[in-house]
Structures are given as structure tokens and as C-alpha cells.
Image (cartoon, rainbow, N blue to C red; front, side):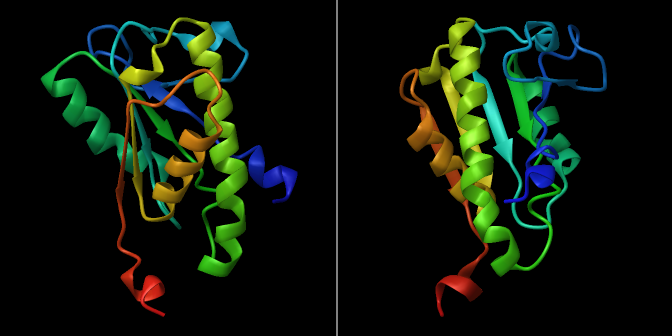
Length: 156
């Protein structure tokens, strides 16, 4: 993957609506000031869109979780590297997943219990989810869920 594409991967996060502004805080690995109201004691959802997805399109997932309780919801926005044909995008999955794993390892150093993390990926975002789970070194992820609509590719 071209380094410029990797720089277009973002981790916007929302916590409970009363504690966080409408716009999410973008968490940056290693930058404690970017944590905003992220609460390491809450269950954390990581939502990942698929190919040609839009990171802010995951807002519905964040709103649904925040409407039923207190959660951290991180939207792994890889809009830049996920754009293009399947053959162009598939090679970007591993580096994006490795970035996600580094973020969760960093959050674990701040006290996040990785067994309270639920990663949810759609389509190629599901592949990213598995790569995150396989590359996290600070512990085991509690749950990984994948939804795929790639039957047209898988059946070939």
C-alpha cells in the first residue's frame, strides 16, 4: 500500500452522547490528548466498513449503541484505501488491520480490557477485523463479528 493511502485511515470515536460532542474525537495511536472522553472502563465497539465504504456511514451503528447504553464506539474509517476495484483494494486490507491492532494495543496500555472489545466488520471490513484480532499483542479480543455480501466473489 502506498504510504499516502495509509495516512488516510482514521479512528473517529464517540462515547456516551452526554459526554461527547456530536462530532467524534479522532483517536491517534500514541497521542493521549486525542482520547477525548474515551472511557477504558466501557465496552468498546469497533465498526469497520467494507470496500468503497464511507467511514461516517457507520454513524447509524454508533447512534444505535449509544441510544441503549454507555459504550465507546470507534469507527475505523479507511475510506481512502478501500476505494477502487476489489483487486486494487484487497492488498490494503492487511496494513489497515495492522493499524487497527496498533490502536487497540495502545488503548490497552491506557487500561482498556480487550475482552470488552467487539469488532464488527462488513465485507472487506470483516477481513480487516480478523487481521486486527490476529495482530493485537496486548491480549485477546472479546468478540469479532463479520457480515459479508461478497458471495459473488467467494463463489468464483
